[in-house]
Image (cartoon, rainbow, N blue to C red; front, side, top):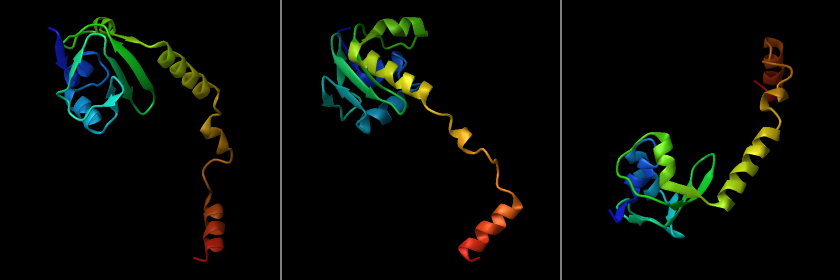
Length: 127
């Protein structure tokens, strides 16, 4: 097997849970193949290609090491690609920023507004 559909490879490499989610990401322009936006999920990927994937919590840049049309266990899927050094450092930096970010719930020291607080707010709004 020399080439494989991009959506099948993304699914087999476990970047997306289903092929339909992979297709949605490709058509939305969230996947680049060799620095070109992929418009169709049937675009073929080959060994040595560079794939960039934008997801809500991280951006990954991986090099294709092997092809597989079958979704296997995670250790087997990890053998299909190798993440680039720049992608690894960016992901680690983002994880460190999230770890050091203040807890959003700490801003709510007073807790939920009381009935009196609600009445004061309503009075200020002119209700």
